[in-house]
Length: 428
Image 1 (cartoon, rainbow, N blue to C red):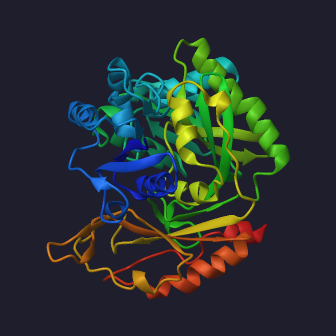
Image 2: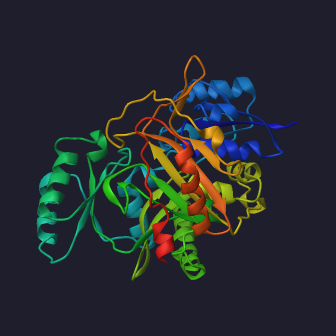
Image 3: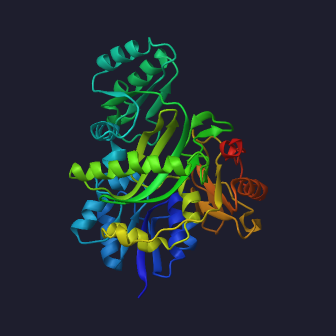
């Protein structure tokens, strides 16, 4: 009997996971909650909110689902894994306490400090007066930049890299006084700004067992050459040339394995995918942040390079048998370019018709991030990031060339995308 899987979430990351699970000979039926128009082509979409844990559990019990795969961070923080495990249900993702590695900057920084995992020097504050005094004092140092981080989840907007004292004090006031991030700003972390090249590293973790997946680089700024405001990600590529075999050995030895062991030592074993956002500095790799789930859009370039079946690997993590899992990756390259709505990451319109997808070359992958179907069956925009267009080729340059050759075939009103995805790889 084939397995039934539920994927929780509605973005490009979830579409990629659904696409890969659909290739598994073990998987007979996939559901998605709530899914999107692209996901609906490979899974049955159900209108349940990702944080409606009771509703999701009822659905899983009703349908006899064998494995639930949680995409976004919000349900993890809300305790979906704990609730499912208490009912004896198999679920992929960390417990609510373990997910604090993403959900609380303070928890994450304190853990790294205690166990010697390399990260930026930092201080934690609960009172604006103390935070402001520290900031004024530190910023007397010539050339020093500080980063102000709200402790809790702030939809990717809770981090400010301050160029000067005025910007740092303004960031503190916005978070701690004006509460622009709600309770996420009750505590803040103020840390030194690290310099170097960023890289995202993904590993499956099951207690102390760590299985490396891949490294990728994403492009957060909305405009070419890293200009404009931060977004959820405008594109990504994998592998990242900065992530050399030598760097990999250091990351495993000094970051991934010690972090997994630290969580066990704290009595909070981590099970799921651990995503380390690193800065490769002249002092070696240092952790900018940890995430408790697959990245988006990095998933769109990492998972298509996975040669092995994904279902047994996810199930092995969910059942504590990661030692038994076999995971191999292609040595080819993937590039993803995100097509976004005009105005993103600010306000944007929805409901613009999307055309041209059927004209794309059959070897191009399309992952839907913000799409919907109208009553008369037309595909329309339904989010800030709309589509991820992905090319897999023998090397980064040919993948970049291919994806940019294909993109002009796709159209919707106000379509916006970066034209320089992968430029750092080419520079190297």
